[in-house]
Image 1 (cartoon, helix red, strand yellow):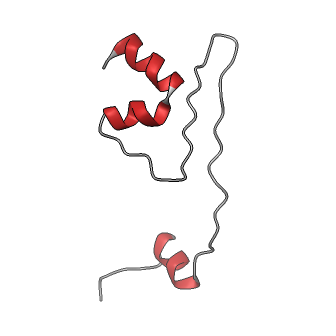
Image 2 (cartoon, one colour; image 1 turned 180 degrees about the vertical axis):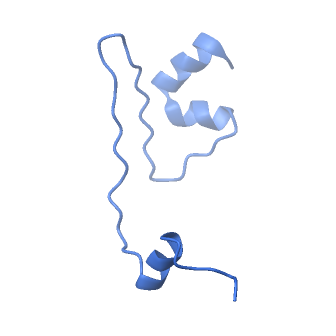
Amino acid sequence: MCGEALKAELIANPAAALKAEGIDVPAGMTVTVVEDTDKQFHLVLPPVPTDELSDEALDAVAGGASDRE
């Protein structure tokens, strides 16, 4: 499927269209397809984190870890 046919299927049935392209949608996951226009665009916010990083993990991602001795 390509071009306009894929677009139409994505809008009508996103999960099935993705599966047909080899992309499995996990059970319980909802896929919403939207199309921007010249007068409207969509801003997608990331999900709110559910866990906080430990001090050690925070140090590692903030450059506090090194494998040099």
